[in-house]
Image 1 (cartoon, rainbow, N blue to C red):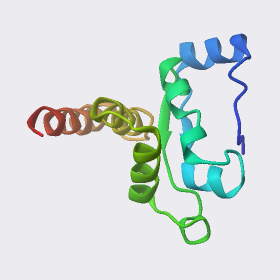
Image 2: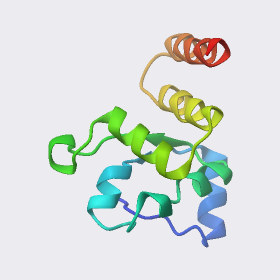
Image 3: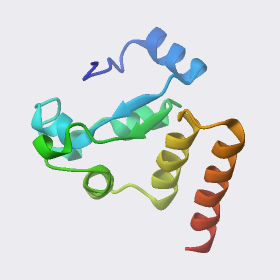
Amino acid sequence: MITEIDLDDDQLIKHLAETQIPLTVCPLSNLALKVVEDLKDHPLVKLMDAGLMVTINSDDPAYFGGYMNENYIGVANALDLSKKQIIELAKNSFKSSFLSDDEKEKMIMQVEQYYQNN
């Protein structure tokens, strides 16, 4: 498991952005494992700003203290994520899933409709 990405490695960042290899980010386990000292220090926004395919996930929720919602809420509050950024993360989870292309599109459209209506 990769727990950290070197944001100074331009070649790696360029490759990840071009290929859109999904990165599963587990903020609460990153905090528990001391990858970051505080969720406010999490590089999630930097990863997103670099054009990387980032998703929010939970890693052993019973051990690290949070399922998906707690990970979303924790990092959204700590980083003051905008509604648009949260929606992008949700869409990325479907884009990088094993669903068929048709199912992916349906789910992404539902997320987009929710965003537009709320």
